[in-house]
Image (cartoon, rainbow, N blue to C red; front, side):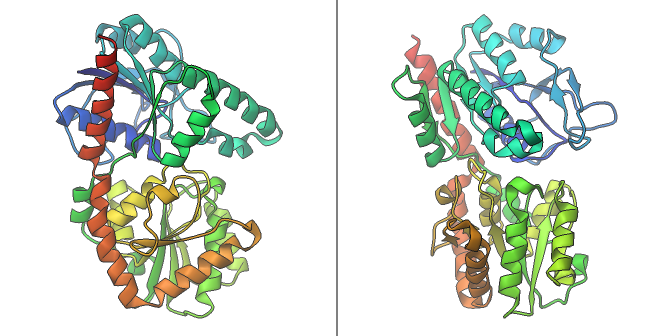
Length: 398
């Protein structure tokens, strides 16, 4: 098949969406399909590189792009105007067009799909309403507008890929009795073998901690929507009874300084460390050398970092939330704590993390089960499911 994949953002910016986009493009190429990746130009001086997904380099058509502060320097957005990249996408004559955003790049993807007479597939990666706090007083209005746009967008797709079953159910419910596109739950895969082969990093040496420290770790963007303050408060609760505990935030973002300030105010600053942005392999190596993964985000469609943590052999203690229950198997490779009531969420997370951190035998058993069970997230398997969805759509048109 010939597949054109459109992205609203791409490498070198690292996020769950950009990693998922590269994983799909390279994975389809490894299966023998022809792929054209249509994504924003990374800008002068930036090498897009790779996030390490397995498979051949995809053919890329670079969309004109711009950088809008305060977004990170490597984050570029596409300009939705006629361009050489769009002409190339039309000339590619795709059998399927796959959009990873319903906005600028999605609109362009839809136009190319119509020109080619190809089905439009959409992966819903982001709970957009949960990011309204970046818009200040416009948050309420923008959230309602986004909901209305999404409902119209979904209805115009041939198929929607939801990375978790709860998101798939939400989309089906929102579509109601209207003509329904096919909604399929397919989690984004990770390079399980690649993560397992990574060497362990040195988180204790990096942060200046004793060699026998028990390290709780978080991976990803350090931002308000990921609830880093809940992780700090949970750590404070767990650390009261366990002096060897330390908390490592692997990643960077707008909440780096607030996390550091919060740690100082809670009198645990020497036991909490934020790395800032790191190359992906280095970040995963630090996770792999830690002891327990903790997670509190309530804004996920899947929580790709959870699958990465399991592949790295770490048990997970997480607050139950969207996407989380599709990844963690309570009592097997992690523990889930209720999200409500919110006022005591951090206390519940801290109690659970402290208990598992203090039970080495149980933690090691869960770590082994995490490594063994991570095969269910293997990228080639998940990409093959997406390819099967394409074939199903194309067969239905015959």
